[in-house]
Image (tube, rainbow, N blue to C red):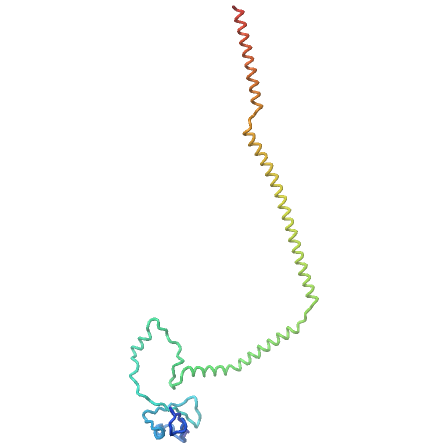
Length: 247
């Protein structure tokens, strides 16, 4: 049977003990009752109220660590049906964060999850270093390529002059088209104005002829009436002369 050295952390400091930690050497782990009796002899804590909890985060081959916890009288606990009913209330949010809970060994799930995250981060450290080195190499290569490029001043000036010439030609063509368009518009406007004036004068003459009297026709009619009256008078005189001669 293998023996171990056991270190126990007390719940509080006792006056007659120098430290909160007490140690026992060459103790069999199967005989916890013997350990509790030794604790009782040192602290006067009843054996029934002692609860030894192993500290899992500190584990060595020949050294074992325990926390001494004091048991207290517990109540009945929660009513199962009542607790289940409260969890289904309308408007109550469903809990998804269980990191404040504890696992079977008494550790909070938050601490367990953090340890797992740290281990995962440490295992991925090599991959991160490789990725950072590759990124640095690509950036250095890009900077080197940019530095190796030479600026051709003559080529730049030729391209600049070509662009300026194209812009000047485009402006000249635009002005010429605008000038031709304005000339065509002026000619069309003049022709339209002349035709409109001719039509207006003809319409005015026609309207005047409708309202002015025809003086020439009335004079001719009056001359005809006077000649007819003279002929009638001559006929009357002739008839009167004939009647007198007959008598």
